[in-house]
Image (cartoon, rainbow, N blue to C red; front, side, top):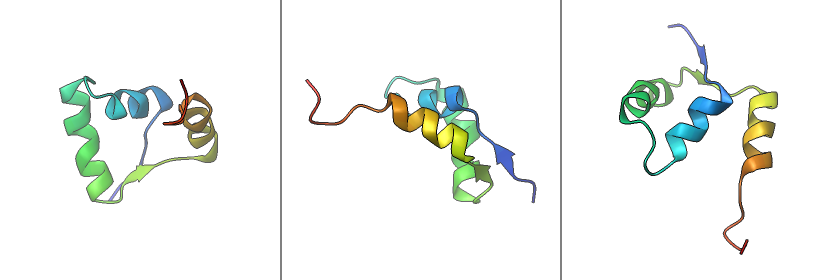
Length: 56
């Protein structure tokens, strides 16, 4: 089974409530089959852009 690096823009779109449905359907099996890779640099980019639920 091949692993796939999911880019920052795809993760952002995946987590958006109105994100692209086709992209979400492509990523879901990668996650459930433990094939989606999240390298440190991509994790850092996502976390830098994340908003706290306490943010105004």
